Amino acid sequence: MTKEELKKIKALNSKKGRKEQRKFAVGGVRLLEEALKHKFLPNMLLYASAGLSARGQKLIMAFKKLKVTLNELSLLKIEAVSDTRSSQGILAVFDTPEQELSKLYKPIYRRLLLCDEITDPGNLGTLARSALAFEFDMLLVSRKSIELYNPKVVRSSAGALFRLPVANVSYEELKDFKIRKKAQLIASKASSNNSMTELTLNSNNPIILAIGSEAAGLSERVLKLSDAVIGIVHSPQAESLNAAVAGSIIMKQIYDRDKNQK
Amino acid sequence: MTKEELKKIKALNSKKGRKEQRKFAVGGVRLLEEALKHKFLPNMLLYASAGLSARGQKLIMAFKKLKVTLNELSLLKIEAVSDTRSSQGILAVFDTPEQELSKLYKPIYRRLLLCDEITDPGNLGTLARSALAFEFDMLLVSRKSIELYNPKVVRSSAGALFRLPVANVSYEELKDFKIRKKAQLIASKASSNNSMTELTLNSNNPIILAIGSEAAGLSERVLKLSDAVIGIVHSPQAESLNAAVAGSIIMKQIYDRDKNQK
Image 1 (spheres, helix red, strand yellow):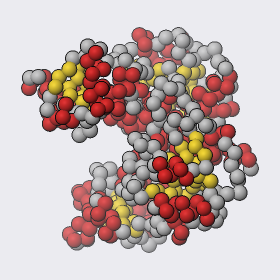
Image 2: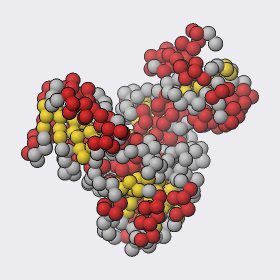
Image 3: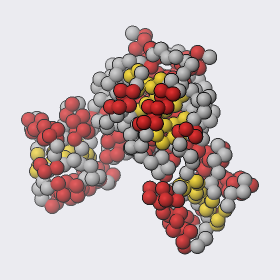
């Protein structure tokens, strides 16, 4: 690889670089095994034989079979272009997926998670991870949330972002979508004592569960758009729960409820 | 304050410094409001009037009333000794609390959370936060877990560490404690399909819920010590849940179950 090519990959560590190239890069054996499992293929793989575990070697071979472009480099060079020191000798460059709601939504989708102005990368990634685990069909991410393909978000998602369709939505798109699809918007609010388990929903229409940021909660206009406001009953000793924990608990409740109704 | 004194406070950003001085330091208005609420008082407060919000000023006044030693400094100096740039003009130095199980445990405690070899500061702090929210009485932290008073752990706990008794336990202490108190050890395992809701427990004896690390799960010997192994049913699409999310979901299930039994 030329110096120029490596420079372009290194530029993917910045938001600007990712936006300009419409690509993102992540490393690590475990994470890239998930990409393989979900058939989300990189357009290029950099690897260093010296740094690879047996699992890493197997992974490289699997990607090779799938005709992914491979580039062998020194471990030092891979670490130099990675965003962390945890590449484990393997770094993959992906095209940023489609993020247009109108192109991604399918009528079969029943459960959507809206991340509203979530700025913590760990929280956004963890919510995506739980959304996949609890069979949410799609993620909606508001404009003011942290950028989705930030490597920290991708890592925290443990590969869920390789699988789940994720739309980046403006408030207007959300509102329009909700009306057209007759979707029921359920707002999660730390101070609410309404429990998910007591909520009656129209099971013919999709639901959108909205989770806001740790510091500010849901934005006013999303709250106004909601059909129901729910919370998680807990001791008053704790001010609130972590946003990803709260969202995950409610997703689990919805998952259990829908399972019981089948 | 002398240069020497400031140097000692700055040293609290390292594990070594915290261990030597048996102290830890954290900043931020919201976090220190929790310390005040739980009456966990610092032995010293550094503040910069220029950097303080109205809430921050109120907080300083409240600590002053409680006879906490105050030191006014420039914002620059406070930032220089803080571990992050988010001190918001206030930094508190605390004595590290007692961490001996035998000194902390009270017979009234019914629900204990064991964090086994958890090395991610965000996960450990978030588990403590949820433990307080779901009325767990005490935290047990295994020797190989990340150090409890690491500022990242304290921040992620959102103040729960100011309230919950936390014991640092060796495996031998844990085993001995379990036998003497006839405690029921419930092990959480990602691959288990046994649900908490189906578990029958002796409600006369305390329970210990054990959560392991993201990467390795529970240690073998803790698993062997357990009376029941449970997991969280979810889609096979996702490999597993985040450790703090999984622990929080099970704590919420135990909290709900105990509430319904009352």
